Structures are given as structure tokens and as C-alpha cells.
Image (cartoon, rainbow, N blue to C red):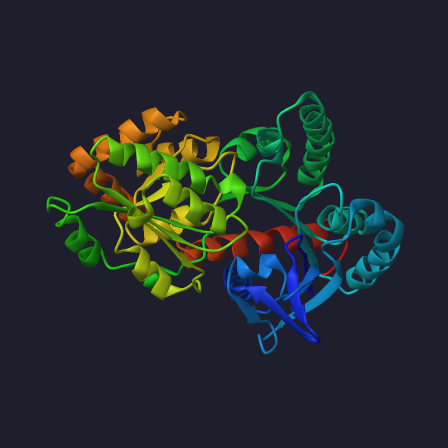
Length: 416
């Protein structure tokens, strides 16, 4: 068994368990890349009902019938932290102990400290000698202070939380048989502590799904026409994604004469507020909120009709959306959070926007005037797409996983 404790909830409707479409694809990619070497993939996760608000953020697909993948829902994801420790922690440890008895690999991360399912699973596996793959894709040490509400007390809580989180994450990296870290601040912070490190970007599209270069060139050929630049955002509509910032930038840029529009693909708790904000800014005719979309090649072809991916988060983030944009030939036009700056250095397919809304609006207007620059960035995005394709990435990941597991078994006197 290849056991994967995940902090992301699965969704239940009676006995049926469903998963968000991008997560289902990631699980299937992992399963296929491992080639059945460790048996079934077993997902251990908290759960939410299918009518929860979080279920509306992306389309759901049932896990029933997905070959060699099993799911076990553990506790209601809405449980308060104090009730988690008083009611759920003991049975959770028993469930994890039972799973570890037959686990050949435990693939985990460190999601949070209040309800630390993934951290508990990793620690138990490491102490019992089960080979471990530790995965961390968001720099919590950077993100939590950025998301803290204004005020002395929230900021003090953020400092306490990160002071507790960072050494625990470092401990996991030191113990893991294979550590997977997203590039950027995570790599710089934890690479010195990892005994076996693979840096990753965690993409979901296949090489054969990359939008044809000729189709991208046909779009680029229209940049000189008298038409608006069409930007897109594709993802969850939650406050930290900063889509409201994008709307304010768009409004200011249009007031300066820029011909720019934005389509927002996705759903979430911010959806109604964003629609109201677009109306209040007088840009309702230039902003379309089109709801959720199923992840797959049809979505990539849809993205290819746009001119750039507009991303203005309010805190550190590492979205796969950036690479989906590359697969559709879209340059990234984004605020300068550390991960975006890393992408700008790595692929040179990014136009960095200043943090100030007025200055960002000027930068967006400058892109409208200098559309040839947008074309150059788009071509670099195309160049980056093949390297980051999921089939190429998962092949590298599977090879390193097999090597790490074999090495761990030999060191612990087990079979290889």
C-alpha cells in the first residue's frame, strides 16, 4: 500500500466519496507513474458533505471505480481544533497505526498544526521505519504572517505559529527518505537539511495536451489588431488569491485608456463580492465570472484563447495554474510574491507587476501599448511547457521514489 494522508478534504454523499477534479488527476498520475509497485494508493483525509461551500469551488468527481485507489475519510474537516484533540486525535492515531502495518510507503507533508493529520502520519511512519516521501508545496513560514489580520495579537499569533511550524518542517525534511519541495523559498530554506531532495513544480497536464504552437502563434498574430487584451484567472475564489486586486488594477488601467478585459474561471466564497466590486468599479462589461470548469485538455484549449494569466495574490502562493498557462501559451502577469519572482527567473515568461495598484495599472497599460513584449513572453511560456509536463515530472518523481524506498529498505534490513 502507498498511503497518502492529505489535509485537503474529500467529499461525502452517503457512501459515495468524491474528489476535486485536479486532485483526482494528480492521484491518477501518481498511480500510473508508480506502475503498481506498491499496490493500491490509499487516501486518508478529512471529509466534508457534498453540499458544503468548499464543494462549489471546483467540480467533483467520484472516486468509486478509480482503479487501485481507495479512500478512507477520517473526521469532519469542520471540527474545531480543541475538539480535534479531545475527540478525534486518539481514534485517528489508531487508524494511522492500522494503515502503517501494511504500508510500503507513506507520502505526506505538513499542512497545519491545529489538526495535524499529515504531520502525525509522517512522524508515526518515520518512527516505525516505514519509507517516507515528504512533500511541501507552500512556504507556510512566509505565507502565515502575510495572511495575518492587522493588529498586534494576530501578528503575535502568526509569529508563534511559524516559530512552531518551521522546526517541525525541518525535522520532517531531515527524516524523510525522499523530500519534494517546490522551488523558491522552500528550496532555499530546507535544502541544506534534506538527505535526498527533488525540487518540483507539481503540474497536471500531459505533454500531448499542450496546446499546439501553431495555435498560439495564430493568437499572437492578432495582437496588432484593434482589440482588447484578454486576461484570465483560473482557480479558487478566496481572499488570499487577490482577484479583487486584479479588478482594481484593471479598472485603473482602463481609466488610463488601456484596452484590457478579464475572465475569471472558478468559484468560491469571494464570487458574489467580486461581481459586486466589478459593478462598483464600473468595469462589469470588461469582467466575466464564468464559474467552475473541469480540469483537462478542454480547459487548456479554452485558456489558449487569452493573452495572459493575471495573478495578484495577497500572500505567498504556488498555484499549478501558472503552468497550465504555460501549456496554453500564456505568459504570467503577476504580483511579485517570492514564487512568482522564482518563475520569472526560471522561465523568463513573466511580467512582474508592482505591488502598488496604481503602478501596476500603469504596467498593465504599458503591456497594452507594447504588445510585442507580451508575444515574446508567450513564446517563452510555450518553451517551458514541455519540460514541466506532468508525464515528464511524474517519471522523474517515480524513479527517485523507487531509489529512495529501495535504499531505505536496505538500510533497515528489509526487502528491496
